[in-house]
Image 1 (cartoon, rainbow, N blue to C red):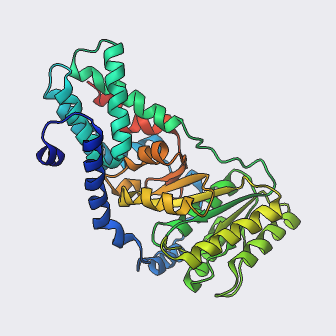
Image 2: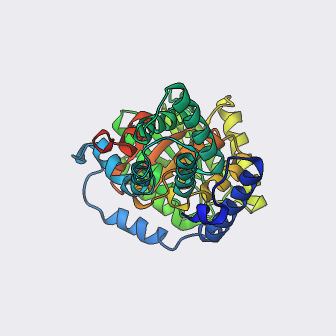
Length: 369
């Protein structure tokens, strides 16, 4: 494997860890530029939404979500679990070389250096404690460790406050506005009254797209003209929600590049308005990340966390990537729980994240040794 060729056989030591960090940073640099600019697909997406004639209903989806989750994680499963199977099948006994091979698999599956080292260290401890002698027995332990990591973070959104205000942030092109529309439809199906705040006032197309989603989902929207103060839009949306007895306010925001200081400052201002108007400091702030960016998602999470109190992540496009291992890294390294995941383009393909179901879909029982 790549890292084996670079480092040869090695023990997990500080020097090696530093080198691995350097390799990881090089891999990140190769893809960093690609996600920093608006993608040209947003207008066609809005047009596609407008021309769809099917009613927006979660019941329209006949396929069970677990089946769709399992199917959506196929590429990630091939990159991680199938490769783990291949490694385990090439070893009869449990030894240091086996752990080195497994470590490389985890790192190359976008789980990240730090998280991979933690998992392998924990795997060694449990193998010793449980007196595991055969390599194939490690797969169940690996699944157990990953499941525990995913369960460490809060994955639920508290919608008990009235109104519950959810600010959604993220760079352009990650599926932010579409995710908001699907969230609105989901909450509407649950019987909640929803108000959308079109606070991405830097692009008229963003306002138009959100308005289309509001119409299709049957929810209210508060919008101003392009170029208006985003914080003023959020303020009006919260006031409208209070006067109308709405349950949830979901605030769209501009596709903020994480290297643009003025946009980050605007995000801070919007957060302050929400806190002032709700009287709560623990409002939901969801960061939308594109799973296909892999480890670069961790960079975005760190940058946004420096200016906003991120309470959770919406991870989109899991169905089109082999880099779904980043879910594990987000939980362990960034201490951020994934709240929603997208595994398809259907309205019900954006679902609340369930750590146990995710692990089961990643490590299906029928594929276990």
